[in-house]
Image (cartoon, rainbow, N blue to C red; front, side, top):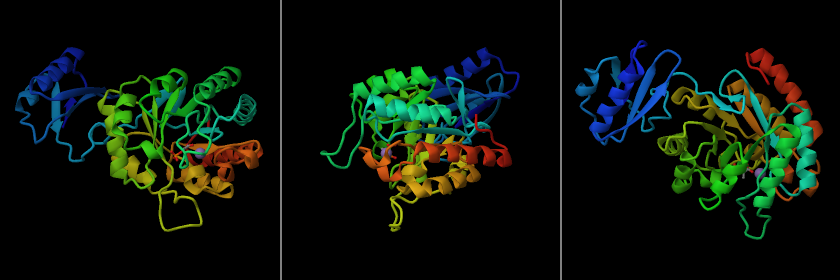
Length: 338
Ligand code: PEP
Ligand code: MN
């Protein structure tokens, strides 16, 4: 349920509405908007008798939300959410490209790649310090040392850092270094991890599970938002299908679907979405055209030596070309690459 306030409603009126919602045993989530404040109501098992709220001063109308996700839904919040991460705005006019290695492998490797992606105009550096690997014998990441290396790259090149948290034991450590906490495909339905991320004061990049429906993705985002963290960025990273010409099938139709159902920003990951370096540029073009708010791209200066995901990593030179193309396309599509 959503309580829509009058444009002229005062903060005191909003507070009264929240009080009444709590009195009814429900949770109130005030959401200030450009025009007016709305108060989201969650915790109801059935339709709420809303008369006592409707009669309060400053209340314009009550909307019963039909979607199973509430805080995430566009019914709750009609304007696009713009997640501001240190001045980089995701979900508005800007098209934000995040790029870097799959894994932080060494200081030299990460700084070399960070310098290149920054020079091409990327504002956000990606790189995993904790890696969720299919095999326990594969490189698992450098852990805290990897986070320190990312922090050094941030200082040197003025980049923001997005890096993955893989469990509740280490997410606080990741949050201490990251500007954006990534929750990976394998953890999309790790509800204790989602809840923990929801309690942190850091934006969350939530990747779609490899066999998750979009409703499941939005419900996962709801877990984060229900804990009070409203800075969620969704990421389409490909799903498993019968197709074997790519590692995953990048489901581009997810973008307009999510845009219709939710106010949250959504970016795509054509690297994991295809698993092939030659498919990254064409699917990046398609992503901006379909309305995505940005990209997550794996870049490696020596892809043949990469400790993870070499076959899908593009070189810095290739990345520079990709950024140029994104700028050109952004101009045509009414977007800006900052
Ligand atoms: C990654 O971004 O390196 C990663 C592991 O992605 P995903 O969770 O989408 O597989
Ligand atoms: Mn990877």
